[in-house]
Length: 309
DNA sequence: CACCATGTTCCTTG
DNA sequence: CCAAGGAACATGGT
Image 1 (cartoon, rainbow, N blue to C red):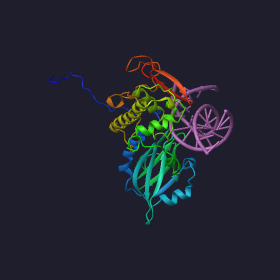
Image 2 (cartoon, chains in turn cyan, brown, green; image 1 turned 90 degrees about the vertical axis):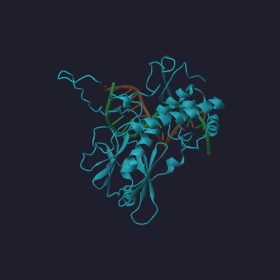
Image 3 (cartoon, rainbow, N blue to C red; image 1 turned 180 degrees about the horizontal axis):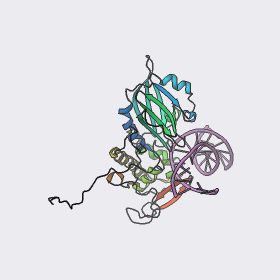
Image 4 (cartoon, rainbow, N blue to C red; image 1 turned 45 degrees about the vertical axis):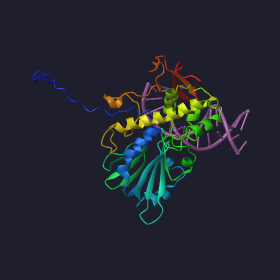
């Protein structure tokens, strides 16, 4: 600063970073939480004028007729999250009890609100008309769901960031299984919302080996892991809340925040995962090489030096 | 071209 | 009946 501008001073032009966040990252609790917060102001109060289902599979056991009857004319009430599930409350036009539409993004699902004039995505599975705009559930692999089936959410374990998730119950639950601790973390009945990425991250933070058998965990170790799970998820939500992604379909971005991807420039896209997908690279604590193993058919990443047990 | 990635459900085996 | 392990699902990226 203070340097006088001359005709020879190069002019720096700021270009917005391209919003091409890696699409191979799957939504877990933090991604769903951030999505729910962003969808809320776009949906609450909106009245559904039409329903288009382009892939019946994503409705699961819900029939197209049932969806139409319950949704057309209804108004979006609350938008909430449970584990990795999105919960949409739909208030009927005529007096009656609200219905709960349950969504899951599977591995490649997206949900966003776009102008009705925008071209429809190739893999748009369900489209709800909202006047000039439409709510779109898109999923290239169609593993996701949007239905009235509440069965899956009733089986979920405690919400990790709420008081119902206690270190003591977590410990008692782990004690009952001979499976590797990493595999247990992926069981949605133990704690809801942890997926393959944050399971590795939490174990690293707790300095516990992913191969440790759950029943061999000590009470202090369980407490450390309990704390690490919560910290990892909270940090991811905080980070995701700062990413300036648009949910209005006016950009070419993928409309879903993915944590920890280093695409583009600037602080928003700094790599923040410590071990996931970093095989062979140095551990951020001790510089040993991060190792990749397969547990239950899924990749696990950890530092063999820092993570014991 | 063969294989890999993810989350959930379903099936089989012990 | 339960725990644990593996296949299947569908598609695109490498």
